[in-house]
Length: 104
Image (tube, rainbow, N blue to C red; front, side, top):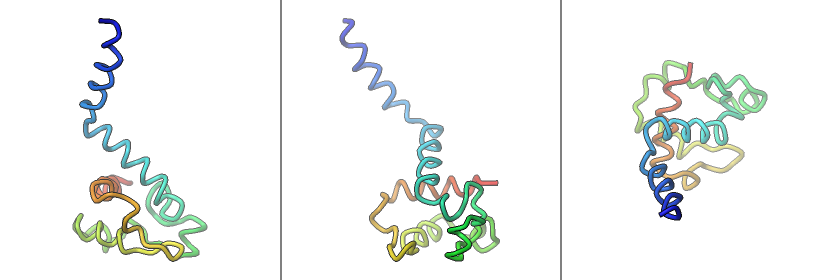
């Protein structure tokens, strides 16, 4: 029976992928893919963000956009000449969009 514990624990962890776990992964994706230009706060006030003219994610234009519009903009935006399309799944992009809306 003792050997079953690791498998049971792994299953419990996998099934326990709650919104909090999803938010953590979205935050991690944002930090890995977006923060270098948009900054941790989403304001775009970073050396790379200023150089590229990165939009402030708190601007009325961004804040007033639907999740679908933001996801489409993310997929089609180009950074260093490469679009993000195909780099993340639609679900990952959706989670990052939701995370962006939580930035203060």
